[in-house]
Image (tube, rainbow, N blue to C red; front, top):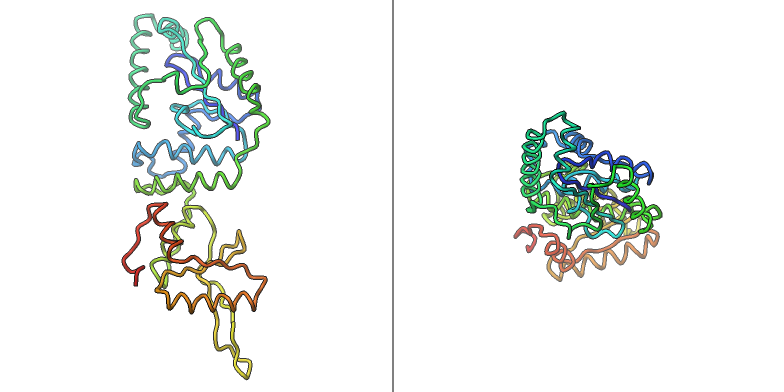
Length: 318
């Protein structure tokens, strides 16, 4: 994917410059106002979300958009998002306080003393906002790829400079965020939000049903985090028949993942029972070679629990 984040010191016309750059690049523009609208639409009680979860919520929403469009993001804290993505250009717009106060005089119709006071207030608000959400209160140039001074340039030349930098990096030719990458990113986001007690946007809710074993409920939760559709024990496969053709033994895999046409069987029991289950899975594969089935053994499952910090109930060891 390609994303250009444009951050501006208070008083500068960052949104106007971002709009011009997005139009020239053909990228989708996401402003702070649009982001807040999306944020409110995703959550009925957005104000109750801990500020520590803000970055992950924004990342989740922008990742979803990035599967369909390249983005120009003109919102607060853009330099802290998607830091590990190669198709990223982080831009900072700066100018001396006197210049920014002059712009506020024009934009807000203020006298110079009032504009200077307003500028100081905006700077304090921005620093507090960034500190609460990203633990960083300053717009350090070290966190940006490109810093542009608006002291002598108008909006259009500044936008052209951003477009030139994006094209030098071949961002227009970058591929959109793939479904696999977006799924991985969403999973990581959902896991962090879950630790804050926040349900991620678009999360698949766990159906109300009884599982035969606690490990199955944990695995279902993991699939939900990944937004992978699943069915619980949807089909039984006869693997042994009697003399009269009656079914005397069958296998019912724990999960079916329709997106991958894959059946999953969880095995977290003692070795004697694992051996019996392996024999059944072997017969299933012999009788139904077209069926794709995978077995998760206890070690595999414990590795998942360790990797993603999921709680392992004592009942799993029975």
